[in-house]
Length: 125
Length: 108
Image (cartoon, rainbow over all chains, first blue to last red; front, side, top):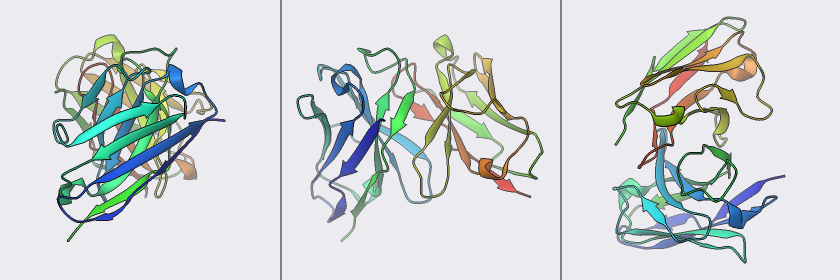
């Protein structure tokens, strides 16, 4: 069955950096676009970034553009989110999600079929 | 950016009742690229409905979605105890992906 397992969260000071990972299994990882979605404590869902199946195109929310970088290693079935210049408002549970559909999409046009359980990022001095 | 507005913010109903949740979008959604997710406390969101009206795999038929253009509805025909949760709509057809603010369905 599909499994997505996030790791790398923790407590970091404002201005610091973290790299999140999402290890995938149970499906052909290299065929599907992947996404990061975050949820601040007690708040709703916010899409953060997307990467198409082969890594050739990446998309970012305005709130993280220029500070976060999404990447993937299809040989390791792993998705990454490099987060730099972190702010207190980046504090959230970060989920990775697999985009469904037939595969090989451009990052749009399909819902998020499967989600990991999330990794918590806390930005605080 | 397409803004999604869900209503009501909180819906209080009894088990066995019918629930109707609304999602309105600031622009027409192409190809009905609208999904509904359910999130229970301490859990990740779960896909319920995609393409505005298609149930995801394993979703009971008491869940149904409808609508097009800018007005969409999630209906739960007869509430079961496990249905009390927060529900989010999402448009996934254009950049950036956006979610509604959520509707909390609570036991009356």
